[in-house]
Length: 342
Ligand SMILES: NC(=O)c1ccc[n+]([C@@H]2O[C@H](COP(=O)([O-])OP(=O)(O)OC[C@H]3O[C@@H](n4cnc5c(N)ncnc54)[C@H](OP(=O)(O)O)[C@@H]3O)[C@@H](O)[C@H]2O)c1
View 1 (cartoon, rainbow, N blue to C red):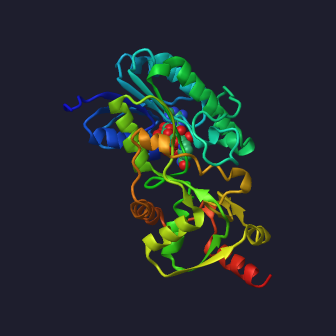
View 2: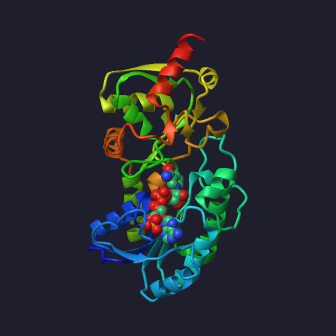
């Protein structure tokens, strides 16, 4: 195959986590990358250009019109939960872009209890509204509903040029959700570790693998809708493998869902939780079929490598920082005491 010519790519965001990893990978491969963001979350990668735009202001449309004049081959939109942002970008840029990437979420499916799902399974009802992350706190279904509406808008505008990816839990450098990272950080302290004693599958996708696949899709003009998920693990095997990769001496103390509930510990995320543990009604959320994405070129690094990336990032953030998810050392000691002296 001949050498690919460099493309002009517009990446919305580019100052943090997923969109920044995509911009960095595209620059690394020699593409001409413009990032459109406010520039408040961080810097764009070296070699990319930042065009300042606040997608929440009335100036957005003029800024998008100016970007449209630059004629991009590719647009990557990771809009978290604003339908308005998505349709404004499409209105301005869809006619000229040869390929359009939209980052959605695995959360769009209507029924999270069922394992083995893939695109084609029913999704939740769309809500075509502008919303913010703060709105999500009061309306848990909103995020997924806005993503469904946004996916539909992308398909309506650029169906035969659209690459829509639905990532599951994203891990790795830049992750600030404290979910996957909790475990390598916790195992690095060693000692007795409270783990959930449950039958449950888990999947994660390292941000670097996701970014690499997104740039592959740009270069190869991959179209369609895919779940961006890695291999399915049994949760207890995954935690064991993470602990082995970290390499500190640890003793697992498995507690049942009942014991954890008794001790006031919740699943998944938030204070006093055990991340990656899912309630039964979400048993299928981290058990999607990884084959379609793999067949479309998604390559996932070995778990050891994912753990090293996550732990390096955790150490840079500070292992003792207040976390959005997990147990503090004091909480874990309390839970252990509660389980041992019921
Ligand atoms: N994290 C996960 O596990 C997970 C799982 C499934 C799906 N996803 C999806 O993955 C995607 C990426 O998520 P991410 O957290 O990495 O976010 P991201 O889209 O990579 O980063 C957010 C970007 O939005 C920009 N931004 C925020 N407010 C803005 C505004 N008013 N105007 C212009 N730009 C603005 C930020 O830049 P400035 O602040 O500098 O403006 C930042 O660069 C999202 O679609 C998310 O729904 C994430």
